[in-house]
Length: 100
Image (cartoon, rainbow, N blue to C red):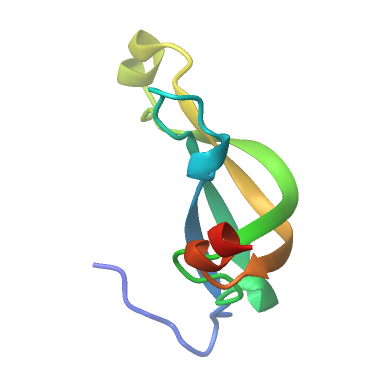
């Protein structure tokens, strides 16, 4: 068991967002694409579910496989995420975006 050391630790704000394209931008019969966005510090709690946003950031790989023999056997398995640098909220909900 790992004991918590609050004096020697630095706690930072962190939020993971799931970003999905607008239904108006998805071709008929297709599933909307989505991606994960990691927000840290002052960028947390800027966006809430349903907001229409523009996010600038760094596109990075995130390793999924374990280390050792199992990872070697699995090959190069990774997913990607966006490390947010700037979040701009255009509309507070999707309904506001469709009405304008």
